[in-house]
Image 1 (cartoon, one colour):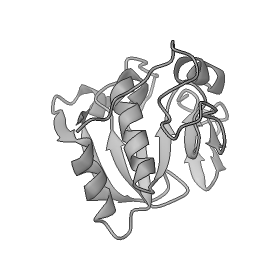
Image 2 (tube, helix red, strand yellow):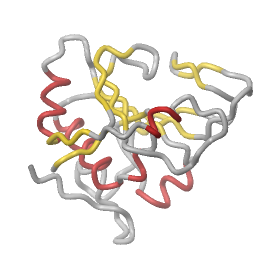
Image 3 (cartoon, rainbow, N blue to C red):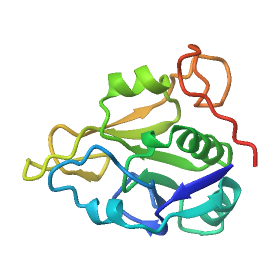
Length: 173
């Protein structure tokens, strides 16, 4: 599967509880006031790479332990998001997803994830920051959950829910 993104950055510290490659989504329609990713959102350049090329670039970096899917909103690219998560986990990489959705809304849309971190919550400029899992969060409305279990559908694909209304993916190269 081809993945559209606005950039890949290796050796990222502080965005996850591990050293990561950050992969930026292509947009965000949420438009949080004061968002520090607004310039990235307005950037016209969109890259197209196979999921295999992205995962192999992460694996070839001796420092990166996983991927951070942030910078913009990956839930607006659901099939690509799920494919990246699935293939990263298959490769033994850690995964951290940033989303403005709260836990319940995210699970309603995508099912309960497993074996990954998710930073939930909207960006609120000027609010009180705090840390969780060693990650600086912009405000008290943001929180990180490590989903150990979940995915009770009996397979290792995080994008196939028990309910047919959930987003599913095919990560064919």
